[in-house]
Amino acid sequence: MRRHAGTGVECCLPDTHYPRPHHALDGTLWHDGLCPVCGGDGTAEGGLCPECQGGGFVLVELDDEPGEAGP
Ligand SMILES: [Zn+2]
Ligand SMILES: [Zn+2]
Image (cartoon, rainbow, N blue to C red; front, side, top):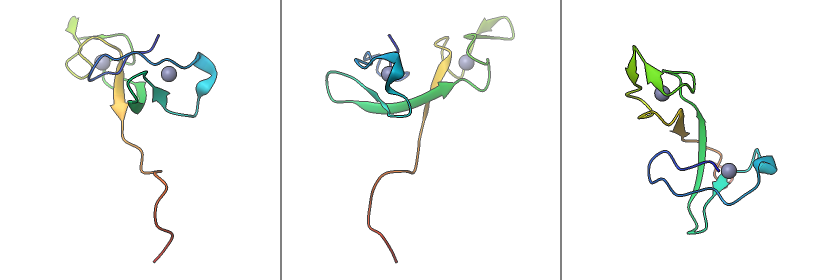
């Protein structure tokens, strides 16, 4: 199961939930993507990738939250 890159909580949805965000049992919602530094490998320059800490994925902030229509 996919884990949150920051807190480590597990996504409880099936792999087919995309493009919906990951969703943990504790209510955490998040998007993630392949680490741009290591390409998901988890290693960089012969060591643990400093960007994703070896997880291969990084959190992605999306500005698609529903909000006020307007101005
Ligand atoms: Zn998920
Ligand atoms: Zn990485």
